[in-house]
Image 1 (cartoon, rainbow, N blue to C red):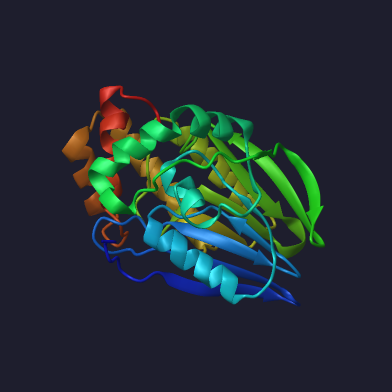
Image 2: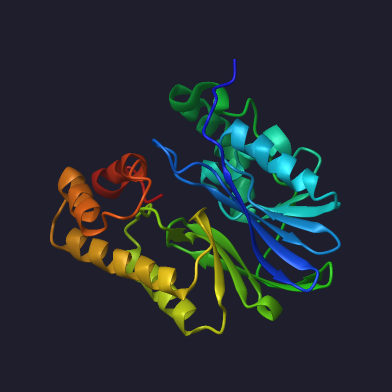
Length: 275
């Protein structure tokens, strides 16, 4: 029996001529973390990330199919399971592209990740891994009439992250460099991460597609920067565990999805690993 989850948010973010940008966000409720996945629509569809739980992956695919256009490809931004677990559930028929490091992780440690999450998520975890079959690296490519600029960002929220810029549209698909309206998954690389957000603020781009929460403008980028700098100061001052969590909850009471603390906080303080 499949667990029933709260309904997602589906939104047409931006329309420029016949090009349309869609964002699909899983629930903000309870311990969900508002995973955001995106569609770049022209004559064909380019998909960014595959959702976490089976339910949301299938709902995302239903929404994609409702657009009644062929899917050109799907990009996975990084190796955290909330971005690739949905592949086997809903995207077995689609060419999947990602960084070589992400392919290597899914191939060697993906099964362990599934087994670990079954204890927490039960029937919403996929039954098997789907290893992406196509490598993408830094560079530029025209896909379905749109210029895509790919970059590999190292040591921020994750060790290797694929970001995508659409210069003609003034859009950056930054995934987990931005947590829009939600608490962030923090690592020890907060200072470097903050520097990348500062560059976003100085860019000519206007729309930033996040990995969690709703599409962001530069105001939300600045709020993420403020959050990172406050967290870095608290970390440097020696706040740990619940003291650190409670500091950020009180400093940023309007941000949602506090369940993220329970996912990362032991890694941040007990040496279990950066990511």
